[in-house]
Structure formats: C-alpha cells, structure tokens
Picture 1: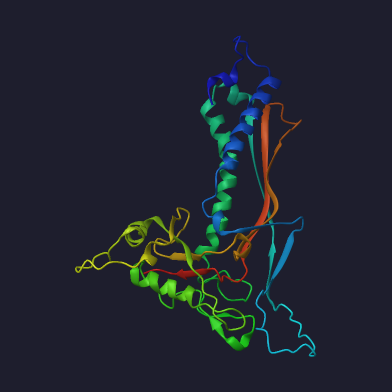
Picture 2: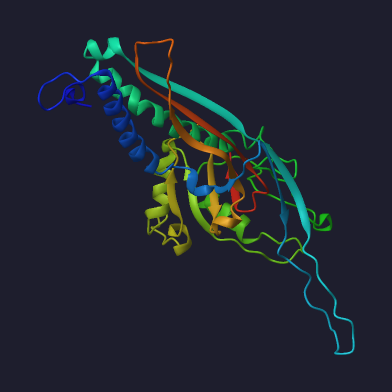
Length: 315
C-alpha cells in the first residue's frame, strides 16, 4: 500500500472519515483477491452449508441387490437403499480483528498498516488449510470417521457386516515407489460395494509432502522403472495420476492416494455455518480508532467413510 493512502491528489491531508473510507476500500480489494485464491487441499473436500451449530450426516448406499427371477404374475420385489453409519460435527466459531489507529497513520507506518490489511484474509485462508490438513495429520491414529475407525485404517466395516471389513491404508508404512504405489492401486481396484460385489476405483491424485517430491515425480514422469539396471519399461498406470504436493502436510513421509470420484462422493467434508465474514469495528470509547475490521468464520471438517482414499504412513 503506497503513501497515497495518506494524501489526496491535491496534497491535502485526508480527514479521519476520508482515511477510514480509503483503508476500508483498500481492505475490500485485498480481501477480494485473497478470497479468490484456491485453498490447496479444498479440492479433496465436499462442501455443506448449514445454519445450525451441530450438523449430522449419514450414508445411504446406492447399491441394491441384483434382480432375481420374477414372472409377470409374481409380486415385484421392492428394494430399499441400505443406511450406513452417520457422523455428527459441531461447528466452531472463530474471530479475529485488526485496527488502524491515528498514531499509526500520523507516524507514517504504511508498511505495518498494509500488513494488517493483508494479514486478516491470509489468516482466514491459513485456518482453512490447517483444518483440512488435520484430517491427514491425525487420520492414522487420532481422528475417526463415521464407523468409529480411524480415517486411514486397515479395518473399515462394510454397511452389511456379513461382508467383513476393508482396508483404507497400508498395513505397514512404505516409501513411495512403483511397488508401494502399485499396492495402493491394487487396494483401490479391489474395493467392493456393500453387497460384496466388485466396485473398482481408479487413482486420481497422489497427495504427498514436499520432502518426497523427487520420489513421486520419478514414478509419475518416468517411462522406465527408476533405478532399474535393465531399463525396464513402466506400464502406463504409473503415470496416470495427478501429483499434488501438499505444502501444508505436517508429515514428511506420509502419502495418500485419492480415487477419481464426483464431488458429491468425496468422503471428506467441510461444513460451513459462516463462511469468512468481515465487518467494521467501531468503538466510541476509542477516539484514536481510524478503521477496524472483524473476521468471523464458523465451520467444521470431518470424514464420513473414506471409500475414496488410501493412506500410507510412509517410512
């Protein structure tokens, strides 16, 4: 923000009202740009909007029994979708504010004011990314999903318990390589639906921390097996995923494979009660306040049943 924020073109010093208007317009312009910036991990989440503090959602399977022999004179068998597990989230309200004071303006603290104006929408963006990241950070041993198991667990229950369990994670950690990626590919490919029938999934993205970028890109971009003295050709399947480098991931070794699914079928969810809102701060008891802004946002994140995910804790 340039020094023109303090003066009109005719070099007359702006009055208090003019300064407040100018800083407010500057903030709105900054916020518009920052709000339009994509959140890195939002692509893996499905959005919900509610006006309630507590939000509950459950699964209903689209899988029905296969049709049986049935003649014209027989009663038509009617199918009912199977209801699965449900999850409840409590939205948390968060607030933060900034103030531009008379003394800051008088002292020509332009850089500090600019940082304040930019920092508030940046803080909102950072909170979103940190909230998304938490599901990956804690998904192996802390955060559970709708069936009560950890998000990345080796024993998730099918809706119909007679079909047992399925694995959404590696039984043991492994570095990213053609071998460990094929294990993930096979895991998704061999998934079954709630009736025990094949429901193969295809990897869409590999989410990984910057520390293993080289290993991931070797698999994603090579036409031959890395570090293979025979120069063996790699099958096309190894280059058919989109690498997503997760700068907000806290683990330097864990990596994740996300299947190609529609947005409505994403298991990870962000529930918005209040998307980031900014309101003026006024304080009649503080005559030195030139302009103030308050950020308010209320939301929660969680995971239903991570059928579209495979996780590897790394090694």
